[in-house]
Length: 281
Image 1: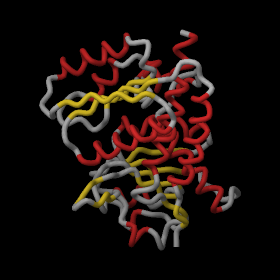
Image 2 (image 1 turned 60 degrees about the horizontal axis):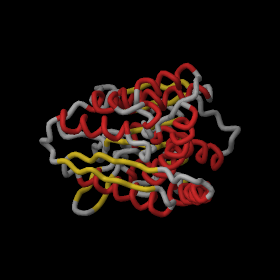
Image 3 (image 1 turned 180 degrees about the horizontal axis):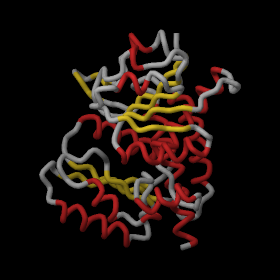
């Protein structure tokens, strides 16, 4: 049976270190979150981010919009937050109901883009320059590293498949490349999904489609990272069918309790990094 990677425990250790760093800061950082629509999973993640910020004494401001809010209104708020010196980080909670996510992210100043999705930050990562790296990607890489440690670091894990969008996959690919891991993005609707994923030592999936990844999609002994979150009947479910995958995988992240807590912890680190970047810019 697969080793379960406890994102809650790892994330708690990181959050405690962030709290200690914030306590030593003369000016406390602040996070602004723009949340559009009523998606239950998005609201859950934002509530977790609020709680983590409050525990670390990072100021948290939430701006709520209906699903049909015109893009111009949201972009105007982003511009305002870019100008505010008391706001260290800005993030637009994804996915958006109908608005253009790329346009929203492009409006955030790169030094305040604590999600690490801005093209300038992705470009900096690809070129090995300083910037803010995707909090989600950092959380995933931390879990993969934990998986390697649990399985034995001598175990070869040099091929990865990332099932999801290009926006999701790109920063993860760059981080894996730094570890000499070749990563291929696989479209979730690819007719050869299982064929392309079950040869990979590392499988990462973030689509929001429960049960997408079953046992036939997984290479024996692989590290499986489930980023999917879908709320059904008050229960949060991932993209991986745990019953069929757990007997095959070497290590896997649970949903909930895996990637979510890790992403929140890495987001806090990014808020502190953003504050440092803004001091020197």
